[in-house]
View 1 (cartoon, helix red, strand yellow):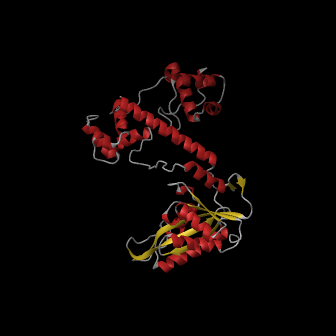
View 2 (cartoon, rainbow, N blue to C red; view 1 turned 120 degrees about the vertical axis):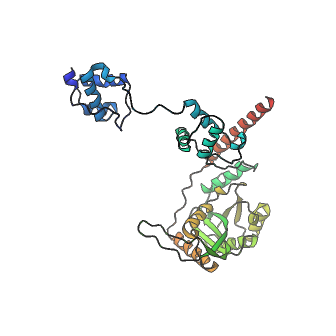
View 3 (tube, rainbow, N blue to C red; view 1 turned 30 degrees about the horizontal axis):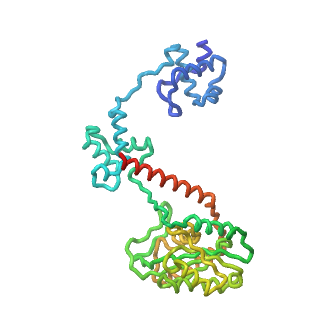
Length: 380
């Protein structure tokens, strides 16, 4: 049997980089595969090991029998830290520094290593060791994300109206071919920054280089209206935002066909001062009877699709900002509109009313759990 197991000479002792050493029972199981006359390649394929690993354990068993399947002493120094020490540092990382009396806004690995020594968790520990411990549980206390609670009592109904319009539905009925949905907003403070030295074009293994110092040439507001279902942008620049600049944008759109003679044109806007509240909706309807203003919920501009277009403008037109004056800024923006409209496709909006219901349900559960936890803490 030993001759049949030793299909190939054993390799040098040690761990193969492809596999961790299996347990003795598992090694014996693989040796039994060999006793059935199976090849190394077949055993490796059936057990998920590398063929060299199979050959190694077969060779050890052929030379030493069952003793060859046991673990051998491995080189290396013993661990410098205990699992308890690592757990205490991880627990410290899961606390806000202010809660522990440390004057920091967030932890870093060097600061955690320093705090671990001051708290006598370990006589000494390096930042790289702390980083390895945190990586085991994907802890990154130096990062942060922000959120905002819903403050609009009508968040659900308002958001549903917007999402229904994206799905070509209004008040339970499908939109007709003569009804359009416009998403509009303002991008404020588009600056003309004239770099003190010309930008250098990219080259082989070299990114484009933009001089850090610049002269200010003023700023303007960029207003845009985006036809959600036809992927068409109307834009204009104004010295500042306000009611009149916004109504100028509305007039620019509504004076063109097919919007001028449309049955209804829905204008989705957020709640900034230039188009906030019922007064703004009444003003729009007085100027254009076939226009209907639909507000997003408070603090929910992310529901407005024109914000996606503004992000495209920021990445492709505005940044890095290098303009000689505001006239050049305006010309660049208008030229980009023409370029965008020539090939644009509607955004693939995937957030539906079902997703909204799920989001609101999760927020309700979170609020209930938070209130229950706070009540329990007060009673204690």
